[in-house]
Image (cartoon, rainbow, N blue to C red; front, side, top):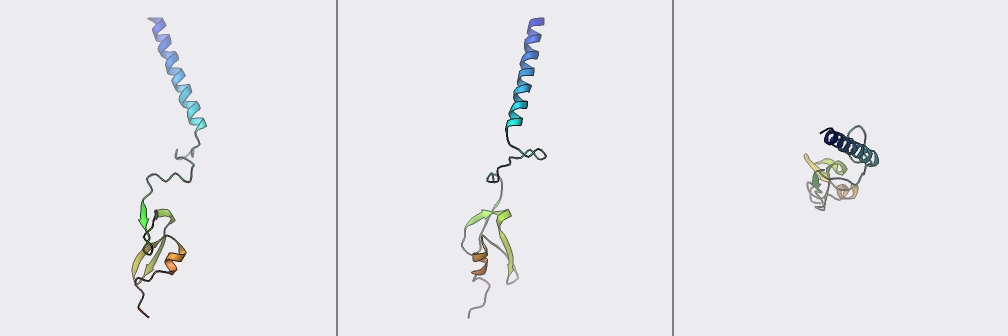
Length: 89
């Protein structure tokens, strides 16, 4: 019985050491625990550009009020080229 308990404690210690080493080798933000990779956008909501229809991550979207309506654009070029809400010339 004491041999079995010793084996169990040794296995638990090895597992804790493994988890500690693994967490040290994985690049994460220590405060939030989130990956540091800026390209990791899993879970980021997408919005559609009002001009070209392209989907982009919400934090990167350009927002503007056009004709009293809130619009979302993918780039300054699309914002400048928005023809909706403008009167016909």
